[in-house]
Image (cartoon, rainbow, N blue to C red; front, side, top):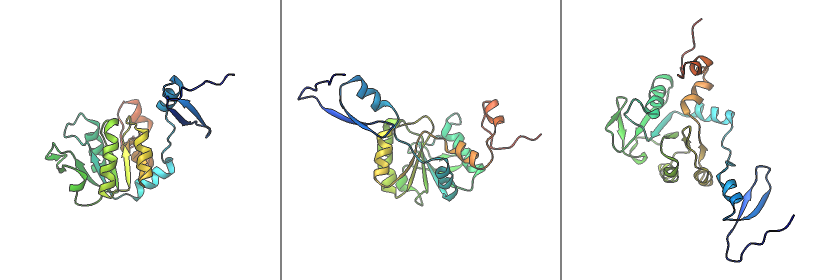
Length: 196
């Protein structure tokens, strides 16, 4: 094996591997780019997520939509009907969502939410993290399919509990006995148990 020389003007990145070891690579190398794209950040485990959901009394949905076809609408409906949370909808372009007042931003809410559930694109997550920190909320929950590892690491460095790429509805139903194979077989996720 030969050592690869790095040009004096080329930047080097230190990459942490999944086994905990680190290595220095030229920033422009294909391996460095591949490793940067891989997920190495690990959020709270199932037991911790369950504790977060059980301790919470209020949830603010950032990126909530009044459009019934959007996943944030479905999640909001579920949280209103199947949880004891006080649910707040944050969308500067809506007046009401699901019969509730919509707020333009987290700072406008009547209380600091226990969980901020985020339905925004991955590139928006860093600014949302800043808003969550400014609001005083302690947990940010980024919805299923949304991943921004740098934002997760940044949020944790600022004292936030960060959950990412997980659906709060699915997790709540899972921990409360309302998620079963019936929901997946039909393509719908039901919070009701099937009667036999």
